[in-house]
Image 1 (cartoon, one colour):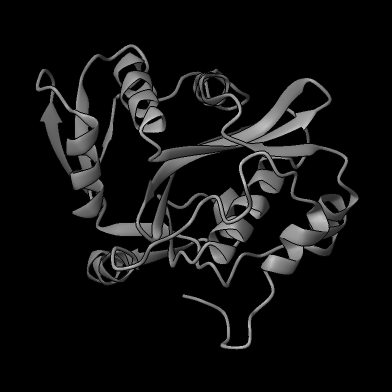
Image 2 (cartoon, rainbow, N blue to C red):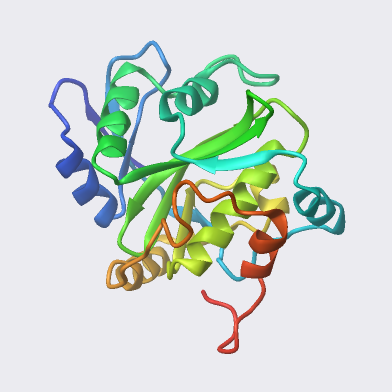
Length: 230
């Protein structure tokens, strides 16, 4: 994995988008570390948009609509939850600079959230960067069983319906592998990225304020007549 220090140089949203277009992204060593590092993994995690693994149990949970799923309602709350300590994770890489930088991207329309609510309570979600036909997942969290998986199902449904071709997860974990994530070599990743950058994905293929049901989300995951997308 390539890693280049960038401790003090200012990173603007425009610079960040150019970095994503080149296949690199920033991280911090910890939430308390003010520095950022450019990362370019030798093997990149992706979830093929036609290959999300949804178990029968998860499909039942999604279809039941126990939770309300929204997009872009409370970016700050999602990032704060992603940065909070959790079982097996005492700290994260989301520092103050990351929060400010991605907050600016959110304000510019290039960063989005998928949020899962149990009544008024935010119980799961994720956020990531939106660029052309690529979505770069940054982090996810859950406070209720399956809440992050529900968010991911709704994200992939939205990306498929919106004409995207790439969902980048950066790295692969056991959790993501169980949902269909795979590792691809850097060269193959750049091929996927180049294709995605020629597209015009529409994150709001379902309007921002429209409540998308679980049935609608699951239907969007089904292969279309031309077969599943890459």
